[in-house]
Image (cartoon, rainbow, N blue to C red; front, side):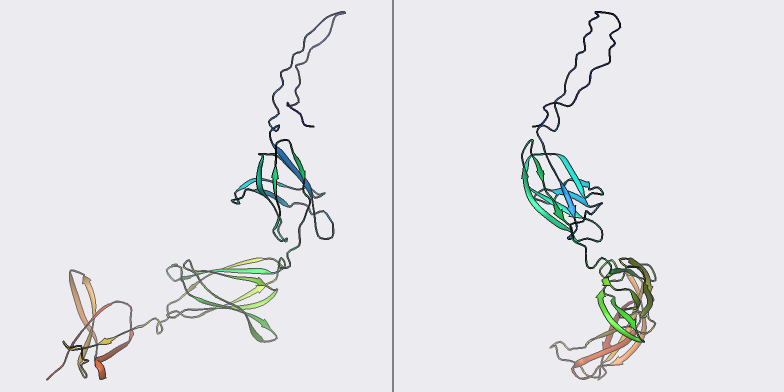
Length: 286
């Protein structure tokens, strides 16, 4: 049985005289929940003990959030004013516990459904997470930095994780046990970075931010190629001059910086070239 109307109350009136007659009218409003349903239940741990503060959420078939509540100290929850429908998903979650998709249910107008659930402690809840953000000295995110996490144990460095940064310079190590660690970050062209990390609180999240400095030696690049004749045949012992290009692109200034000769097949190579714009010119004496 459900109420058709909201509980109403009339205005107050007084009967003061003997035999007096008064009138109390009351207009009832339709119960807004008359065409909806509700669910309720209790959430316990696997041992049957109530778990308080569990988020109880109802999603539709597309996993869009529709309704939610928190249960009380007795594990009890209740959600009302649910629009009649099918394929509702009941989901429960709490920090330190595993997400549980309890059931899929349908509900009609005026229906109340009892749904009890069990929520299981997350065995990884006591493990920690290490996150990081790596940038160059201009605070530009560095992608592709190789990051290694090593646990210090009795004087030994034991690798426990390896990852690389994404395009935003971000990295993550999960399921990290308590202890002392060393983090290493390496990328070609940059000076390797090392940091000591202490994980002392179970279930903690440690966020690290760092900058990698450009290596004065490894940051140098190389320029190579081949010098050929009109028939595509490599020209051996040709003189190749490397020019650095500067100034206006419409009227560039060329400054010679290196010189070499080709070997068999017309190949040449310049190593340890600083960052910049370059062209090569080549010829061979008769």
